[in-house]
Length: 58
Image 1: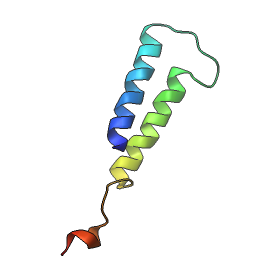
Image 2: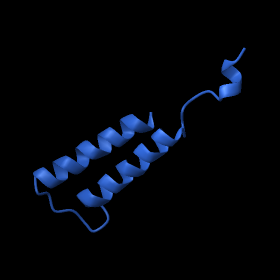
Image 3: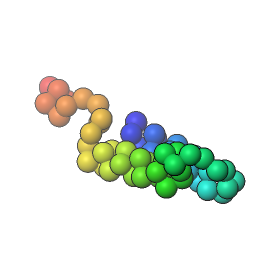
């Protein structure tokens, strides 16, 4: 789920950058991209993966 959210944020950052939309200082394409990278790092790190490994052993 976090990987999908990261992909959406990357796409939004691309649209902001490609369309040259002027935004405020908080909502720039670089900041949206960094939030996407954070979500991607959490996804790769195993956060938000669903069931814990002990529940699957049954």
